[in-house]
Amino acid sequence: MTRAKQQSGSLANIPDAILEQAFEWAVVLGSGVSRDADRDAFAAWLDSDPLHRTAWGRVQLVEQEFAAPRLDAAVGRVALAKADAKRRKKRRWTTGTGGLLTVLLAVVLVFGEPFHWQADYRTATGEQLHLTLPHGGTLWLNSKSVVDIETEGARTLVHLRRGEILLDSSKVPAAIKPQVVTAHGRFVPIGTRFVVARRDGVSELAVIDGRVRAEAHKGSTADIIAAGRGWRLDETGAGILPASGLEPGAWVDGVIEADNAPLSAVLDALAGYRYGWLHYESDIAALRVTGVFRLDDTDSALNALTATLPIRIERTTPFWVRVTHNTNP
Amino acid sequence: MSTVVAAGVGTLYADHGDWLRAYLMRRAACPHTAADLSQDVFLRLLGRQSLPPLQEPRAYLARIAHGLLIDQRRRQALEQAWLETLASMPEVVAPSAEERALILDALARIDALLDGLKPRVRQAFLLSRLDGMSYPTIAAQLGVSLSTVEKDMARALRHCYNVLLG
Image (cartoon, rainbow over all chains, first blue to last red):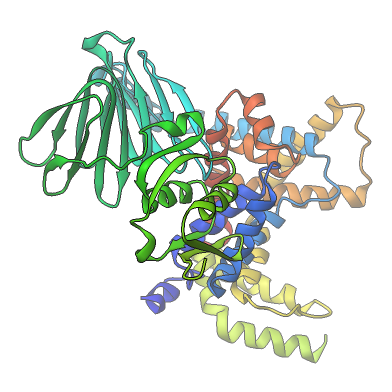
């Protein structure tokens, strides 16, 4: 396949996925507000595969095009915008039919699907986002999450693509309460506050207040789930989600609240707030944990766990952490 | 002409000449132009004192070709816009004739890289990469969310990459 690609004239040899990672790193490192943790994670990425280095080198070639030492940035920027605007104006005049088509398309879009718009939001590692939805209701995004928000008339659909959200729709009139959609089903609130998460091919629901109607895409299952209960939807259907021992949505307050929770659940939640890899051995997964752990300092949280549990933390680098059974405490 | 350079260019031509023609064919208006420009790239290399060590010879050739693909009309339009901008900012010191050529060359390359991007994406990217502004500042200045700025940056990088090396 690589050969075919090369013959067609591409530079080839770097999978698109790796190239995308290189773009993402260039975005992070060029933010002007990147942190030591970002740079360390980047260094780990760069070292983990020779192709990463090649991809990074190419992205740097692109970046170098913008390093024009004698150029006054403001003058350059304005001149480029001016030249572009003139070109656009000219194109508009010279491509009359194209312009007309655009207008027709716009008419179809405006009149065909009234008041339809879509926006997507995402959070990086360790980041949370708090949004007010177009027709009321409050949405929180946990770390590493992606949603598309779509409105059709007075209805708001929150498509959860990845990660975890908390939706509070208690103050929104019943008829226009925002709904949550995942690959596995739809969650329709009945006066409420609830959490939806996507993990490993499953959509998980935890209801905090009120009730939620859960409808699986597959089959015709629909159930009404009450506060304090959990529900799961996947490819095969729906069923009760056993309590994890973690307080649902506690992350909105910046913490994990564990009440006799398995250690694996706590570590998985902490991993969502860390760069790099957090591994643990299966023989410690079922150890029980009770306590409150802060998400803004996951290293302290890990250390706190060693105080009460027979476990040991091995930090090869800050981004490569293993949790193992401590046989001689 | 150095024999080392000549030998190096010979190898580049043998290994990547066809590839470069294909690269130019996808970008130039007609096949003749593509063939001519490909010759120009190698001629330019022959005129150099030395060749840098090349880990990515095709990327190197592509960057030279990118500069040659910028047409004269586009360059002139950009020069015009730059002179107008300079005139409207009397506080900026006018560069010397020598600097001017370098600046216009860099601007033309940037202009060609960004062509086809939406104005907001262009502006966000230039505020970051030319002015060195942080994303939160850009978000505030353009009145968009931080995640929009981040998405614009990725979009602009991907676009420039495809123009230059894709």
